[in-house]
Length: 254
Image (cartoon, rainbow, N blue to C red):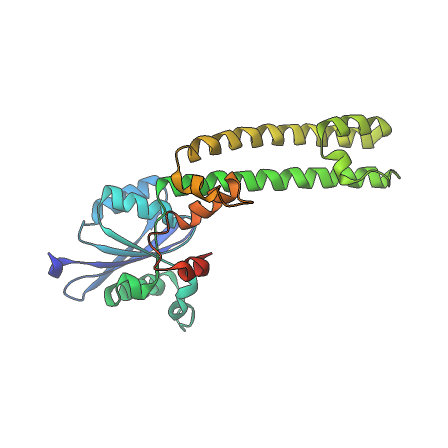
């Protein structure tokens, strides 16, 4: 079976991918395909469980790697793009050349030499998505509050600071100070903030369910100053820490 092993490099674009295969007889073949679900299913039918596939980490790579492992059972290596200087130093720079270089790298080196990126577990991936949504909603809320504060300043209310428009009660009280278009602008901002805060509450509840029973998060929360979200961020990136040789390796990953 080892003689039949193929080494495959996949260069992922937004809509298409370029694939190159190095066969056991050194012959090189390849093709271009679509990244939609139909294109992915067509690809998985062509792959073999004995294949060793390498993909550069990008927004699509985690999904592709997980699907390949589940539906094909092949070995999938995820590479950190910062480690792929060989590709970016190349005079030739196109998808076909990149895919072929990836295939040659995975043929020549083992996982440790490649410094591959470990595929996160489903739990870790869920945490990442939930935390990213919380972060985005908080940023959106801050932007709206800053915008409301700017409106009050433009109307001469220099004594009103950001914290005066941060709470719902204060916002509703201070809006009475405005008139005309400024009041209309603030009302629109208030509606957006209410919606954001409602969504934030829902996502936070989802996080509570996701971390329930996670012993690693519970242990981290015993550290003074570490709350649920901080602990969840750590676990989403580091997992249980079993893939790291020592604390220095963990620090380097962070």
